[in-house]
Image 1 (cartoon, rainbow, N blue to C red):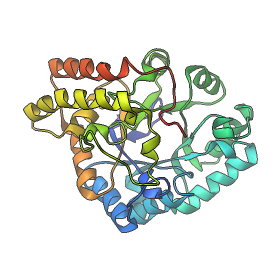
Image 2: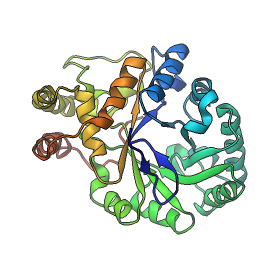
Image 3: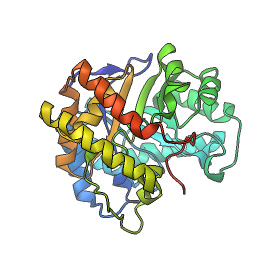
Amino acid sequence: MELRSLGTSAIKISPIIMGTWQAGKDMWVGIDDDESVRAIRAAFDAGITTFDTAEAYGNGHSEKMIAAALHDIRDRVIIATKVFSNHLKYDQVIAACHRSLKNLNTDYIDLYQIHWPPGAFGSQKVSLEEPLSALNNLKTQGKIRAIGVSNFSRSQLEQAARQADIVSLQPPFSLFWRKIETETLPYCRKNGITLLAYSPMAQGLLTGKFGPDHQFAKGDHRSANILFQANNYRRIQQALDRLRPIAAANGISLAQLALSWVISQPGTCAVAGARNTRQAVDNAGAADIRLADEDLAAIDKIGRTVTDHLDDRPVMWKF
């Protein structure tokens, strides 16, 4: 798999990154630890070198699953994790980093990200200067190699970039969720900030596995996703019916079509989750797909039949 630069840093990352929210188990159902470990290792074997997690994913459980899967090849992988919005005071950031280092069974974190901006989800709102000062010091000490942010608006990103060398932004971005295109994406491209797109398959919608009458099991957070709500879900089903022939003509899955479209966008990599080895290998295969310009244009147009009807709400869920 051809690697890409992470922002202006010397770090090289795979265009398909394995996301491991599901490995944390919280807010998901039917997740098995052994299967998670096998899926993470299968992703590496299929060419994925970069793995994304967070302290908030199962209170560190996802980080421990990454350690279990990759501890013997630590020097061959890139690990990204995140500090949550309730741990953004200086001392809290330091403590959170140390916990993540322990969970990941490593001496350093390649990319350490602020998961949500201060004040998110009712957390205490602190000045951005406080967590960024801690991150800068962690970087100087060699405990982290690079600094990124997640779920930041353009103004928040600009503020952060004045206080630290921000190499990446991790927002939700897919054919069905494109809120960043107007303001944030142009800023990232102008300033060499890599986009790490999470939910690039719209939380599974772009795999085509959810039919018109799908109901989530109790405890699955996706039931609160705006895209699964009545009118949006109906438009999505119609869009999927138009995307399937394009995927079939290219001999690829719907998921690979969606991921290939995302990573074809300049400066953009896709953070794709997988519950099992089959999904991990399928996701990795998207890195080798080169869609024709006319297919990319058609896919883009179909995606807008969904996104043109969404409001300005930046968060995908109604928790």
